[in-house]
Length: 202
Length: 284
Image (tube, rainbow over all chains, first blue to last red):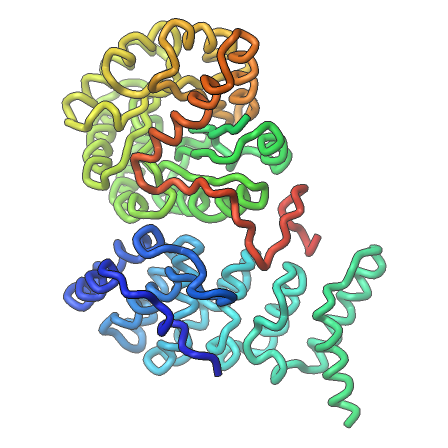
């Protein structure tokens, strides 16, 4: 398990003020959420981290909401629906942390994200929360979408545990289709297919 | 030649246009919210449109190395439809968004009382959100419309240096120059200004507070008119620095007042692949 990304967040007075504001008036998050990037930065949280500074700040703001269950899911949905790509990514990044308070109620947001063609949203959606909650059909299609969009398959949480015969068939069919068109097959497809075939022969 | 197109409706343009614009030197642009030809009948249609300006279109531009910004407003033409007045209630949550660099396009189309009310209300929103304003001037009765526009701006109390009055021509540039507002010119293939007329205006009025745009949209228009104007300026003896002032520094100075411009070279999504030819389709 890697360290909690939030531990790398530098101190920032804007964040402190925003957290105080959200504690006092949870509705204020609607106007603070879009302003995070320009006040705190949008660079990588640390070298080689897929998280950005604004991702981490948005996760903090969401964690500060005094809601649970349906009410929390409602607020997350509103922020996601009204959010631009960065704001939506922030909501998706927060899901594993909020899971004890929302269970599977935020799953529609994950489904929405993997239905886009935006690699940033799809990558953020396919974290530990999706690994635990998304159904197998949706998961397979999300993996295939990653292959289509050249999103590294290594970024998908829980992939190794969820590869099954149907997903392997989909990947092999895709590879054949690409080969028929005279095009390359993303290299990270083969290790997954090979590992599954090896394991199933044991 | 480095170009910032301060007014272009990319949602109506193709990826070929993005490619050609990048080749011509366009590295940043502003897409104002405006009408779509087909009138909208619901507030939801505006919400979807605003979202596409902040989301899909920004993403699409980035695939072609161009920084996309937008302005948000209820446009003057549709301000006349009472079904759409609630769009005004949606604006505050959009005006806090990244890359929303002005309130616009606002102003007059037919100079109706409804247009006046909506214009004045949106000037208040600009002041409240500390944003500049992009003002459209009417195609018909342009000179009178421009005068009334300047009166309403003066009444609002917004500083003139935070306002650009757009679609000007030889008849209207003078009063706007005197007002202290920025002057916008849309260079079109058949109507509005031509690049040669634009060069003459620049000769007469100088390059200060001057913005040149293509205003390219779904009508007959040309997204490379900014570049053509730069070429025409050089051919007429303006220096490369003059061209840079008009086509880059001025839009940066005007929209930079929002504090929300993103001008670094587009960082292509590290997990996507920039192919320079098209938005990826089916894993291209």
